[in-house]
Length: 133
Image (cartoon, rainbow, N blue to C red; front, side, top):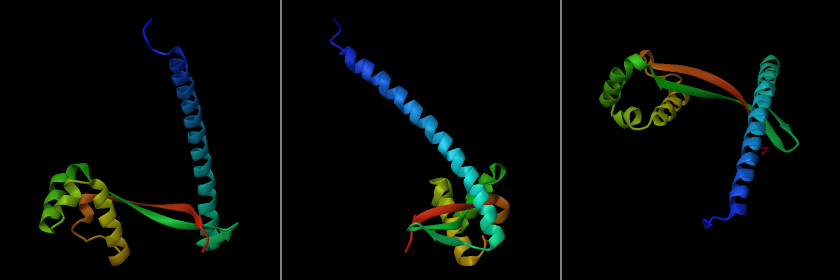
């Protein structure tokens, strides 16, 4: 006798199997959402509509800005950040670079010209859902 409860071992196996099944379902639902979102982005774009209220929810188009350091320019980017008092943004937390860049794009309309060659930038439109006002 090992002192280990066989029922607990069996329960763990069952729970793991259930988690695997749920993860597979989640993956399928995310793919389905991605497909529907691509259709809606096209429809929103063609109609010129940016948001709609449906069943107490506001469905709207949002653009996410993605910024990352170019691999070959990381050293230059760190130097640029230090020169502008932003070294902790690049070195400590890459997500902070994204947040700072998004703020710059929203407030200034673009990133500084001398920063642009050092980073990869792309925008991704998304369809989002929130509670209607």
